[in-house]
Image (cartoon, rainbow, N blue to C red; front, side, top):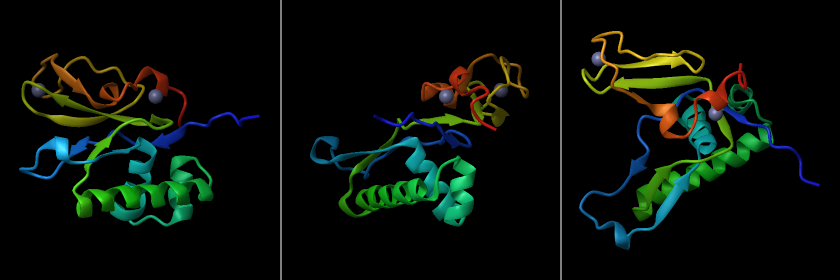
Length: 147
Ligand SMILES: [Zn+2]
Ligand SMILES: [Zn+2]
């Protein structure tokens, strides 16, 4: 019997989703997929310097799950740097707590609660907005699923 999946908590969507060595044709490179939960583990431990205990609480997962995620994430990021793999961030069993919005008209970029409904840029009133959580297929599904 498989255990029910518990959605992992990711604070906000990444700003960049694809990394590739400059000047090398894609067809000769290997592609690696970093899931959003691996990304979040890497961000918390190696970018912000969280301990495993603190980071696993932040993501709403067990320490052993966190340890597995961070090991996978480091292996993939190392493969990107050393072997020149293309790294694409996508997928993962997660929901976001916050969203990032960028205005296509003035470039203003801001963070909102995942539950907030924003239809216009607070700086220039444009309604042409880029929704980062939406680009990962998230938004409504995340509501009420996280702290
Ligand atoms: Zn704007
Ligand atoms: Zn979601």
